[in-house]
Image (cartoon, rainbow, N blue to C red; front, side, top):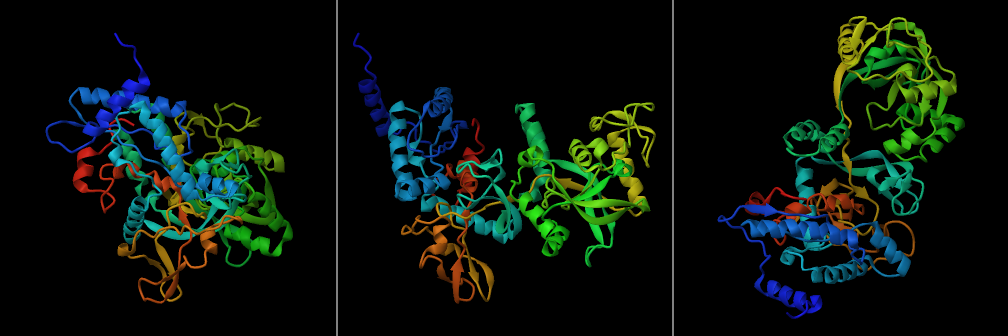
Length: 535
């Protein structure tokens, strides 16, 4: 028998497969469909063994399904926008577009000899105007439906790359690309209103058959549904307009263990105080050097500043609590203010120990247990404990029962109201960079923020940009920002923020069902091929 020569035999048969288009996916009513999808690769220039392993596994599944009579969709594309291309352009003096498309060509030439069962006719890159123009159309649809909005928000700021980072792009308090310490800044940002779907997302987890339980639990915790009490402490001698501090707590059963009230450095009261007090201002500036991720907040040293203000406890107006500005409180979760119960929260325990604040137990493991604690006592909410400082329900009850009883009791006394909240926050998608999908709105002095007309899409990136100074080149381009207002025709300016690269990779699986359509998807194709059967 002749010897097996991969370079000869594989190349010959791959040429036959390509000529006969045997992996081309076409809708068919005669076969059951099967959609196989692997991770969307970033075009760094070289595939590595991780790529080979991943795409080989997908190839095995796709070929098996073809062999068992399925109509298989097995596509490939490129997650091509993002900061790395800009950084590379600055490092080598080139252009992100040239760098990216050159890398795509290199990686395609490295992947094709593997003989993967991919329908290459569906290939696209997220930096293709044909792709991001449809993404801009989706943005305009969302804007029209009230699912996109603009507001001031505290964000993770990378001072080296000079752009906003998502929490997932912050690693150990540093930017994932630059390695710079992330800072908290307030910027005007665009948001997707994903929080409107919190309940729906949570309920949908129950429909995911055969998903690992730990993955579903992680998702449920990320969405983070909680039932708590929202109420206000009245302030003592506070500045005008701040006679109340609103708080939200998931443990109203611990109200009699309150030791202090904490507010975020970005709380309106803290911002007012820092205008007239240099010490407050310096403390708040120091706090904003940290990131907004839970990891960075939990691992950072707990710092507080005693404002000298006091609040009255809602159950006893003679009982006053100190008001601290604290570095571990975020403005965009709850109300930006908390009451600390050190006996039953380890973070509060560390804070109270550091600043010499009372530690008051409201429940114990047993009636005769020592109420003096070496650390916070935090049993599961389903555990039955003895309430020595309870004000609602039985002496012996679970945390869940005590929380419900406390909410009812507080509402009956006019102390706040029961509220359901979700931990899931809206998706901040603005990025202050060039190499991303332009946000299709304009700013008009007369009309304000105006959506671009769909017939003008795609709003393409200019090629003639400079990376010789940090920041967003679109802000410095001599002509690209200049446009006319779609509403009144007056001179206007384009939005220079571009979309987070996670937006590009959040819908590509749907685009693969109709990758060359002049709409984001085609309903018939999406209904046939969706959902992905194996990722």
